[in-house]
Length: 496
Image (tube, rainbow, N blue to C red):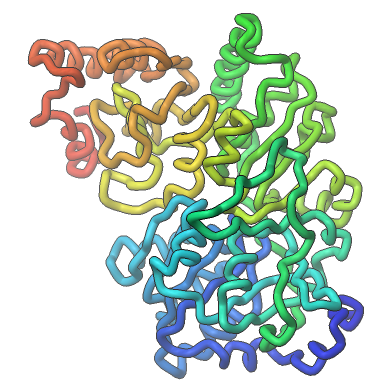
């Protein structure tokens, strides 16, 4: 019964339908919604808002933790609700609207959004819409499968709408660790000293008077679209495993490595899954998204603890893990994303960061966001938070795409998200390039020799040789540097 989950009995008087709650959201408002990589998003009020907008012109700025599930961004775009969206998304319909200039998208490092809000550098949140599994006697909001930016949205907003999702198990209570940094300029250090450090409270502290409406829902999270490991992703995992084993042999790492972080997606998930068949043990994770591989590693006895900001699982894994979450709870924490992605903590713990590149160039610059240099894919997400501050920053990708028409390694990236200064190791199914301690010319030679598909290696070697003849710290043929991208646009392939 939903009454058991709403422990502050005064709030029972504020139970309304999703349509009624959506009326609290007015044209021109800035709305903060829960949701991080298709997990824990408010599910009913956004759809009610989209329905209302079909009859009443309505535009909002929408902030979330990261991407939403259940086609919510799609519904909001098709109803012309979104004027502005931040800090991350992954919906194809929204992506088209962004690239057409119909929705203004602000691509942000995931650790920064609430810092900008807290410092009043961007428009304040008028109303927050947060999915919860329960509300405490004092009005504390217990999140579901993600925290993301929900805590700060609820704390900073003038009003809060809470969606109580009856399909999310009450055993989720106790999983979360809500800690909000103190204000600048006298901010205290964030006392996370290990992935399993608990430093906050297990709910979002909100005064019950601030909760304007409660909506009872019954909807599951969307499942992730992660594909099982294939030959190429297994090869990437193999190269990385061999490299890390060599680091252990040299005494730079122990068999437990250092806390692992992995970005969202098939390749990163497959790479983590590959740790099952390695001699590494007693592994820990300090990441933003806990994917299928997290639970595979726990079940295999390899991973002792995982800290993140959300759980984003495939359909099969979701059906197995969520009802049995109590069995895993002692090994998990979900934190606000400004803590899971905080530079201070990442640097302190010595994270091994593994993120995915759309493309990288011969000097180690990485493009994570823009196809052809112009069209947004999803956003930078948390990769920059980890790449800049990790003990070891690793980027992985397959060497080619579109049946070989595209090389993921190019003379010059068409858009830079992570400069060469933040990239330590690059891995494709072809091999691994360790760039630590190398100058740009040495980086180029190493990347071409180890990461490039044979179909493109001669062309890249020729480009680099001719660029060297011109000189420079980072030699380039400026008139040719993006020729591969223009060729792809004109002919559908990078090389004629």
